[in-house]
Amino acid sequence: MTAMAAMKSRHKGNKTFLPSKPCAVCGRDMTWRRAWRNNWEAVKYCSEACRRKGGADV
View (cartoon, rainbow, N blue to C red):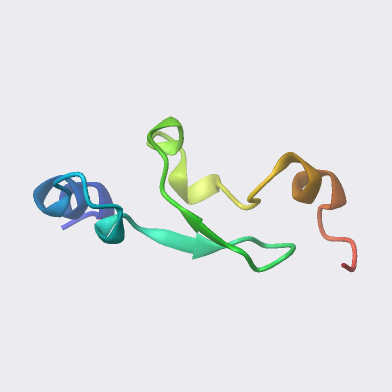
C-alpha cells in the first residue's frame, strides 16, 4: 500500500494521520500538503528560506 493509498483510507479530517518528514536543512517536521501530492517524494525543504540555504551549514 502506498503512502497516498494509506492516507486516503485513514484521513477523516484529522491531520495526525498525514505523512510527515523532516526538512533537509533545519530538521523541522513537515506534514503532507495537498499541493505536494504529485511530488511528495521530491519535497526536501520546509520553506523558501531553507530551500535557499540548500545544503549549506545552518
